[in-house]
Length: 437
Image 1: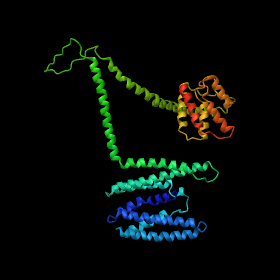
Image 2: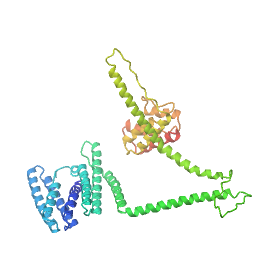
Image 3: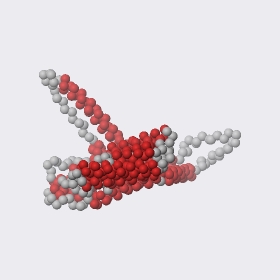
Image 4: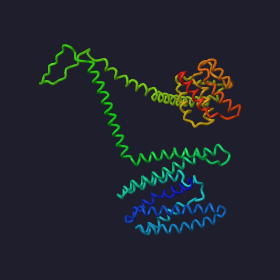
C-alpha cells in the first residue's frame, strides 16, 4: 500500500491540468474524461513499475517495454477523451501530458514517488487554475476541486506519517527492520481517525455551524438566567426602605436618584467569579508569557553586550595589556526555577514511554526544586541519592521504587520493569505536590 497510494496521488495530481484543458472544451463531459485519464495513467504507471521490478538488471528492456506500453495506453486514453466530446487536440495533449508525467522515475523508492515538492506543486496549480477559471467566468467546480484536494491531502499526510515511522524504527536497528504490527496498527488508527474527523467536519459543516450557533444562544440564555436570578435574590434581600413613599408624576417620568447608604453589599459577591477567572488566567497563561518575553529580552540584551565586548577586545589587542572581565549570569529566583521545572515536567509527561523517557525523568528529578538544603551531588550514586532523600525529606519512601528500577536496568542489566515510568511519574508528582514545585 505504501507504493500503490503514492502512485495514485501522482496520477490524480494532474487534476488541475485536466480541469483547465477540459474547461476550454465545453461540450466535453468532465467526469468521464477525467475518469479515463486517471484509469489510463494508473494502468500505465503500475505496468511500468512492474516491468522495472521484473527486470532489475535489464534496464534497457524494461525502459523500452514500459514506453511502448505507455504509448498504447496514451493512444487509448486520447480516443476515449474524444468520445466524451473533447476535441482531438485537447484529447491528445491531455493523454500525452498525463502518461509522460506519471511515468517518470518508476523505479524510485516508494517515498520518492510522491514527494513534498509534488504535493506543493499540486496545491499551487490548483489555486492558479481556480483563479484563472474565475477570471475567465468559467465554472470553477468548487466541490470537485475541494474533494480532490482533500483526498490527495489525506493520502499525503498518511504517507508522510508511515514513512516517518519507518525512519524512526530504522534508527533503532542496524538492519532495515519492519515496523512492529501493533505500532503500525495503533499509528494508522490514530492518523486515520484524525483524517476522518476532519473530513466529517468538512462534509457536515452546515450542521456543525448550526449546532455551534444553537449552543452559543443556549449558553447566552443560561448566563442571562443566572444573572437574573442573582439580581432577583439581591432585590429580595434589599427590600423597600421603611417610611419612604414614592409619588409617581406622570408629567415628568424621570428616575429618582439612588438613596445614599442603601446599596446592598451582596452585589459585591458578583466580583468573586470575575476575580477567580482573572487570577486563573494570569497564573496559568499570562505569567508564562511574561516570563518568556522577559527571557527573550534578556537574551537579546546579552547578545548586544557580547558584541560590544568583542569589539572592545579587538580594539585592545594592540595594547600592552588589557583586563578580562567575566560576566556572571544572575541566579534565577525560586519562583522562576519552579515555573521552569513545571514546564519541563509537562514536556516530559508528553514523551513516549521508553528508556529515554526514564533517564530524562530521573535527571528532571535531580533538578527538582524539592531539594532545598541538601541537593544531590554529581558524585552521588542512586542509592546515596535515595538515602539523602530519606534522611532529610518526606515521604521517605518516595524514591525507593525509582531507585530499584534504575538499579535493575543500569547495573543488574535486566532492563526496565514495566512499571518504571509509572514509578518515576509518581515520584515527580509527589515532589511537585509536597514541595510546591
